[in-house]
Each structure stands twice: as structure tokens, then as C-alpha cells.
Length: 372
Image (cartoon, rainbow, N blue to C red; front, side, top):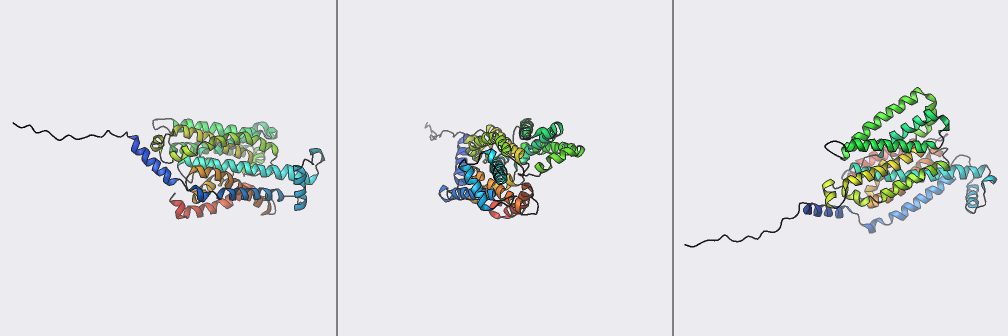
């Protein structure tokens, strides 16, 4: 009796479930990364444009100062020849009005640009705005209540009040948005932020309607104006800006991974939960501080990262640093136009809305952007 034996079949060890996913994620990341050599000239061009606009901002404004007198004032100030007690009207106008205003535009623009990049990455939506987390509404409500309680004595303390309101609101959004059986996801965080922001906006509007003196104190700030800001406002903004930017600068690789989905991000070694928490803290500090110092400036955090994707692609290692150049440049352009485009000066937030709305409509109609 012959015994037939079945042929032996070699069995390869099963691959871990994360390995194919990791390989696919790495392939998508390499495909999404832009070629660095073709983008390098963009950085010096952006720096030159930003420097030129900053200089122009020092020469434009109320007072009708001749350009030669403005240049001489700046030269003497840089050389240390203008002590505060010997400054005349021209020196006070250039050094205590235009210079802090330009510095505030640079700082607030950089904050809003970085916050927009991080927010769009967290929401996985190129049309997301930092205000979706309710940060702007929280900052505005805190300033309204502070003005109602403290009156005109609030002074530069409104910056701290606004940042505190933004932090409290963002904390509430994160706690509510990450609770429940579904855990944290972008849609849940955004919906929670929109809901809380709507409630806070209603409360603050009710206070300003009931107390007209409060509305008079916050109306210019609520329109997004850089007018009348001094060096104290810039100084109060800088600590929050520094911490928020420091956090944001550590996030580009994690944001690239997060754009592929939570599972793919985990396969690449990223931690989606920690990335969202760090991103939320960064957006809160950046957007809250910028809103506190300059008021709610619309479209900058939304439009700048969206437009830059046409230039450098979706890689956050390029989007974030370029937004730090493009957003301040846009805010400087808006502020310069606000000074010269009308018989009386307009709030910069009004100009950004006029510039941003048609440009954003044009961008969203382009096929290249729709496919991002």
C-alpha cells in the first residue's frame, strides 16, 4: 500500500497589519513633498517683499511728513541720537505711532498665518479658519466683560484678558470635543468650537447692546484695527507669540502624517492625540494673542495658507515658514491701504475683508486648488 504525501508548502510569516499601511503612508508622504530646489528662491523673495513693505509702512500715514524727514528720524533713532525727552512731533509720530504699528502688523500677521496652517491641518480642510475653534469669540467676550467691569482703566490689560478668554474657550472646546465614545476627531472639534463660539458671540453682543459705553470702547478693536496701538501692545503680544510659534515649528512633520489619517499617522510613528493637543494650544496662543492686540482680522489665517498650497504644495514644512512671511506682508498691505485709500482711516480688518473675499473666491474656483 503506497502512501501519498501532500507536497510541503512553505508558509511565509504574516506581515504585521501596520506594515502595508506604513509603506503606503510613506509613499504618499514622499509623493506629497515638494521638490526643495524649486522652492528655495521663494524664501528670499518673501523676505525681500516683507522688508520692503515694513519700510514703506514707516513712511506712510497721517501727519504728511516728508520722506526725507522720516528717513532722518529713523537714522537718528538707530544711531541713538534721539532720547525720549528730546523728541518732537515728527519723532513721536514716526517712533511712537508708525514703528509700533508696523511691528504689531508683523507680529499679528505671523501669528495668524501660523495659526491658519495648523488649524487647517487639524481640521483636514484647506478652507478652515482659526476662528472655528471659538478662539476669536472667547477673546472678544473676555474683552467685553473686562471693559464692562473695569471701564476705561482696562488699558493694555485687554491683551491678557483676551488671551485668557481664548485659553478658557479652547480648553472647553477640547474637553467637550474629545469626550464621549467617539473620542477626538476633526469634525467633532470644529462643531464644538462653532457652537461655543456662537453662544459667546451672542452673550458679548447682548452686553454691548445693554451697555453702549462698552460698545464705544471696543468698537474700533472689534473691527480689527492697528490704529492707536503702542509699544506696550507689542510687548504684551510677544510672550504668547513666542510660545505659540515654538510649538508650531515642531509640528510640520506630525501634521504631514496627520493629513493621511489617524491610522496612517500612527503607522508612521506619530501620535495624533498629542499632535491635536499641541496644535490646539498653538492655535489658541497665536490667534488669541493676535486677536487681543489687533482685533479680529478676517481672511488672513484662512486665505494665506490656502493660497500658498498653489505655490509649494501641501507639505507643512514649507507652508508654515512661508506663512510667517506671507501673512505679515498681506496685513501690512491692508494696513497701508487703510491709511491712504479713504479720506479718513479705515480699520485694517475692513480692508482684509475687501481683499480676502474676492481673492478667496478666485482661489477656490481654480482646478489646482480644488484638487488639493
